[in-house]
Structures are given as C-alpha cells and as structure tokens.
Amino acid sequence: MTRSPKAKAAGSLLGRHETIGLYDSLLFIGKPDLSPYGFKRTRTVYQQELWPPKADYTTPNEAAVRSKADAVLAEGVTAAVPVMLDVEQYSVDVRLDPSHINPDISAVDANILKLEQIIGWFKDEAPTLKVGFYDVAPVTGLPVTGHQPANDTELTIWETANSHVIPFVTHVDALYPSLYTFYTDPAKWVAFAQRYISEAKRIGPGKPVRPFIWPQYHDVMRRPLAGTYIDYDYWMLQLTTIRDAGASGIIFWGGYQTQWDDAQDWWHATLDFIATM
Image (cartoon, rainbow, N blue to C red):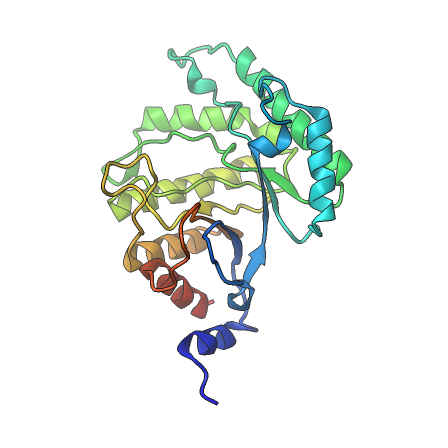
C-alpha cells in the first residue's frame, strides 16, 4: 500500500534527533494531532481562567488560581508539559514613567507582587508542574529601526527595565517572550528576535527560553495584512533564527476561530524545518 505524502512526512520525522523543542499551543479548528511531527503538548492558562466569571481583575483570586491548578492536574498535565500563565493585566515595565528618570516604581512593584502571588498559589497547589508567564519578561516595547534594535539610549533603558524584573524571574521555571510578527521587513524581525532571546537569557540564566510565534501577521498590523499568513521564506527564517539564537523551544500559537489548512506555506516551512532537526 502506497502511503500519502503526508503520511510519509510524518513517518520520516519520527525518531529524529531534536535540537530544539517544538510545542503545540495552536487553536485552529480541525487541527490534526501534531505529535507525529515531533510537537509536544503545552497548557496555556488564559487570564479568564484564573478569576471567577465577571470578576474584577484588580486583585488576584487565590481560590480561583488554586482551583485552576487542580483542574490542570486533573487534565493529566505533568512536569513534561510546559504551563504558561497568560496574565496581561499587570505591567511590570518601569518605563511607564514618561521621564525614564528616577521612576516611581511602586505600581510596577505592586504588579510584580501580584504575579508572584498567582504563580506561588498555582505552584503550591501543583508543585510538580513547570510554570511560567507568557510575555512578561523581557518587557515588551523594544523598537527596531534600520535593522538594529533601537538606539543606544533606548536599548539601555530597556535593559534597565528588564534588570528590574530579575528577582521576579526567579519565581518562574521558563521564560516565554512573544515574537509575533509586527514587521514586514524580515531583517527587522530577526534583529528584534535575537535581542529578546539574548535578553531573556541574561535575566534568567539557566532557565529555558521558549518564544511564542504566530504564523499570521499580528492583528495590530494595517489591513489587509493583519491576520494573513506569513510566507514560506519568512516563516522559515523565523524558525531558524530562534533555533540559532539558542532558544530551548518554540511555542506555536494562533489560529483562533480559523480552520486548519495544511496547504499553507507556513506549515510546509515548518515541516521542512523539522526535517533538518
């Protein structure tokens, strides 16, 4: 019996040596099982899962966090499955002070304490799990101009903001920066990604760094580009850049309310990338 090209591809990928972990956090409708391609399971816990319905997010809710940790354990999640808490309510960026000079960081430190409470309750309830936060550290907002990350002053301020969260990073088991596509110029995206991965390693030495990527242009991009799929070459460049920058893994995210389509270029690029591992 002749196997289909898809089956051949899946079979050929089994048992290959992995140099970087690939993690499935995709939301596509009709998405197939990606484990034959080497993808590993993840569990993204979204903000609304950590509070009761219609709750005020101003204050973390210990009962809800502990209940969700129990529920995640009941799903069969183990230490081998990265758990990412997606709490976007609390900024930890000291650059929120517009002067950038002697900033009043009391509000930021209060937010850091809230995040520490959330992960502390979650890990206390589920001590076997490996838990981190999506896109908290390094802090977001490093501009890229002329294919280089910011200017020297902006870069120094950004690094200082990241140094402020180093004590917080000791509470997480891995770092999950967001490397979504805001740039149409691939060289700018490469500079952005390399800098974020390098900075994640600096503030979290020894901890896994697993960036989130999204095979569509971010929805903040101008129409009609927003939400469109990234082409083969650009997606392959993103995958190889993250690998070559020394990340421990890649979290594939996206596809909310979108039908899975394995004819898309990004998926073909992913398969070709996996074949090189």
